[in-house]
Structures are given as C-alpha cells and as structure tokens.
Image (cartoon, rainbow, N blue to C red):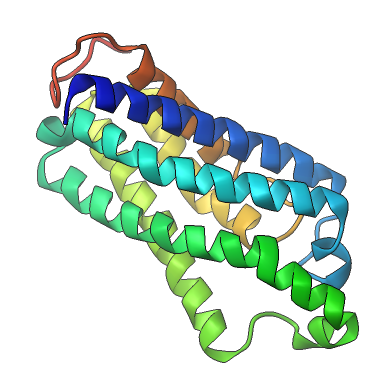
Length: 208
C-alpha cells in the first residue's frame, strides 16, 4: 500500500473518530435507556444513528491504513488484532445500519409490540453479542499491538485499549456516551497517521 493511500486512511480514521464523538455528544440529549420506541423514534436518535453508521464505514476504510503503517513493527499480534477488529467493525456496520433504519421503522409501526420485546429476540440477540465481543476484543488487541509497536503515540494506544470496552455502553444503551473515549483514540490515531509525510510503512515514527 502506498504512503499516500495510508495517509488517506488516516484521514478516514480521523473523520470516523470525529463523527463518533459528535454522535456520542448528541446522545446526551436522549435520556439514558435501553432502546425503546420513544428513544428510537426521536429526532436526536435519527441523526446520531446515521452519524454512527457513516463513522463505522469510514473506520472500516481507514483501518487498512492504520494497520499498514504499523504492520511490520506490530508483527503477528498486530495482524491478529487487525483481523479481529476488522471483522468486528464489519459486523458493527451491519448492526449500525439496522439500528439506524430497521429498528426505528419497527418501533414506529408498532410501539407497544416493540417495547414488549425487551431487547432483540433469539438469534438476533446472539448476533449482537458476537458483534460486540469481536469489536471490543479486536480493538483492544489492536491497541495492545500499537502500544508494543510504538508507531503511534503510546497514550493514544492506551486510550484505545481502555476505551474499547467502554464503547459497550454506547453500543447497548441509547443516550450513554461512554464510547467517546474510543472515538477520541481513533481520531488521535488517524490524525497521527494523516500528519505524517513520507514515513516508511511499518517503521516506528518519531512520536511520544
């Protein structure tokens, strides 16, 4: 992958982090609760759910650059983290699409029936658990690899490690913006990558 494409990947990751932060902050206008017909049909939710979907797509694209920049230095641990986090993020894109468009439509058409579900049923619930587990564990593993590789600022890698499990709050509860830590880490990593010029792929950058 060329250095220019890698830098553009950094821009995509930085924008993804910024959109995630905006979505998390917007969720403050929604009272914290598990998804309900009232929360899923509100205007703030309509905006922030689309922002999350756009951010997840950008993150999926930018992740190639984030990984390529440290691939050699991160070794097999970095590759394992990339594969796990990429899989989790790809699944999350589908989940965000469903929560942005499908779930609100169901909630609007039958509010009482939707609220009576008390969460996703059967296989759908299992699918969400797998998605969240792959997303969180994958990004934590990638953060550990980044910490060890020292290509990105170690503080950003640490924020990613700590912020990944906290992102579960944002994924599971409407109006609970704990994902802002993960989002800030992603914006930081993306900015670091985007701001580099002519850095060789996979070699440690001079960052603190």
